[in-house]
Amino acid sequence: MELMKNIFFNTDKLIENSTVKISYTGAFFQDNSEEVFIHYGFGLNWDNVNEVQMERTELGFQAELTLGEGETFNFCFRNANNDWDNNDGQNYIFTLEKPQTELIVLDDEPVSLGSARKLRRSYLWSKKIRLAVYKLITYLPKLISGNYKKSKKTTE
Image 1 (cartoon, helix red, strand yellow):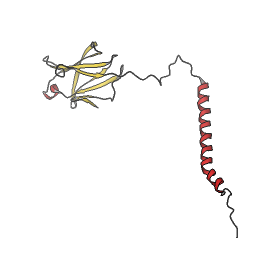
Image 2 (cartoon, helix red, strand yellow):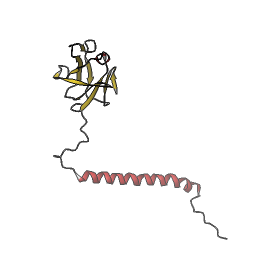
Image 3 (cartoon, one colour):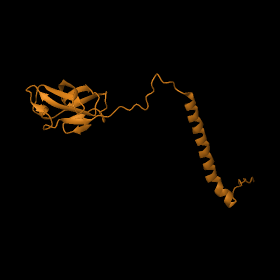
Image 4 (cartoon, helix red, strand yellow):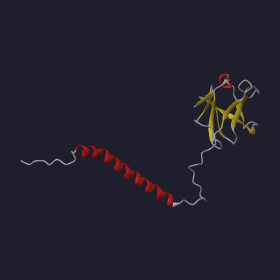
């Protein structure tokens, strides 16, 4: 997924506390720099600042990072000559999403079988109602028209 020109991630969404692989094919890759570092932090104040050397591959410089917590993932790139690619002084800033926890069942919480029974009961009732509606739609016109008797086959 390309989020910005020359910067790619291996995921569609950047989620807090997840691992992401970032690929950079910007100016330092095009200039054949030998070493490139990603300098990054989280949130408006650049909390938990870190710097990691990226690995040069055919697809660009790559690094695997664990995203921290914050509203944004902020980063820029530096080469061995201390030249910076910081998006013309704006830095590269992407929004981080919170992990979804609605479907996670914690070990501390007991699972109630009563809710499963209620779901099964409601499923069975919905099935019965659908069958009744089908029968009404199918046989009501026949009753109204008087054509409700089954035709008997004549044997010769």
